[in-house]
Image 1 (spheres, rainbow, N blue to C red):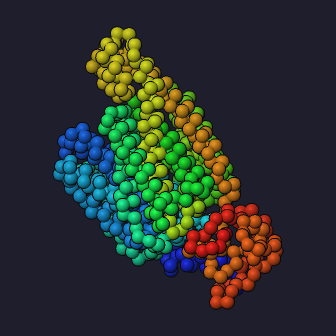
Image 2 (cartoon, helix red, strand yellow; image 1 turned 90 degrees about the vertical axis):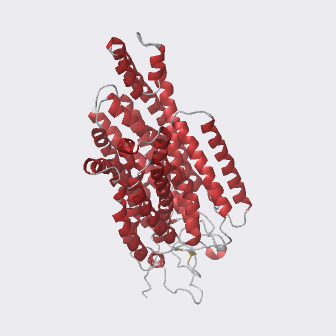
Image 3 (cartoon, rainbow, N blue to C red; image 1 turned 180 degrees about the vertical axis):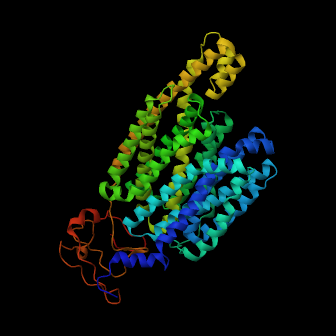
Length: 583
């Protein structure tokens, strides 16, 4: 082997297990695309499902919510299980279950069977989502390449979320509602054998037994919390909302206490003591909190205030998706140039600026304003999420990659649910007072119209005449006012996220000698210009060659350091899991 072989090349060879890592990335992105599409594709099919299966109000709610509820609650369970039994194994099992559940959903002839199928889809999605990110962490140990891979991964996620409603609308125009699920099956039939052949297997250190009780406690706690948050988002504040929230919080507290006491915990909670990891998780929650509530309110504004059709609404939101894709693809370059701290803070500030710009929206259509606002919103938000996900995944120990990925995805889901609840509450609080005293409108009609703009239009249509028109105009004016208040609150949350991001590392720390299982055995971790090394034997002056490797270890010489790149290569001091070497 040539003496000029770089440590990064050795690391990629060990991680790739003979497979082309970029082909592996394609397989993982296809997996993610299916899950992202399935999360939104049903929304446009709800009217057709309602007409065909005649579900009750509660059944319809569970048809829509079973998938995200089950998926969010099981992410930690399957993420940590993948670390223990093998991430590829869990991913392939998720493929199989996703395909079977898709067939069940497509041919369901009653609401209860469709609910069960949607829940099984959630189980499959919980297997697939953390596995894709943790395998990506394994296959791309070099942080610069991994940043590019995460950029592609996140761009695919943005595409999937946007394509779901468009694909669903196209299929419904030509086929029955079950086709929105049936489309998954041929893709899974291809992904299963391809994934088995191309994806490398990886797992954690496997020390100690897997904490089954802890996994089930976390799943039950997350299910209860997400259920309560979703009910809050729907404006329900009764016992059916507060009891699940309280029970979920208690279960999660018990889970944390159990993990702290165990010698071999399900999740190494010490990851949260690392500022970069805990800050990244907080940034993901805040970013999603702001985004999802805004998307929901923006869709109502476009359809109910401006009178656009669902297809026209989707077209107006397309620039947001393309801007997010562009940010994902440019994310690796921005991360190298600006570092995590400035990149995530800049993303939050861009998103806040877009939100403030959108406060200029009124009762009339302003297409250029919406275009500029949505482009800034998509680019800024994806910049934030990219930097946060990359920092979180790079900070986590490699044998905890599945658990770290599950924490990130769970934060994403919780942020989305809390965003709908919080911003929806702000919207309702700002909207309702404007309908309390509309001339000529009875108090009962005003109270009903205060629930939502759609209901206000229905009440106005029943009233008719001048009173109905007055109620309609008042509702539109109140909704726009509520939208402005909600946008300002969202901007405040985004600026708080920008301040939080200041705890992230200033530079993108790259460790060119880290192997998938830690530093190369017997190789000196010394690096020119590094001040984070421990022990006098690790000290190396700039320009001084590293010490020779011990006998029996690899004999390739490390390349001469590029002194101009030293600031980007100095790692944060962290202890490599399973070894006494600090790198």
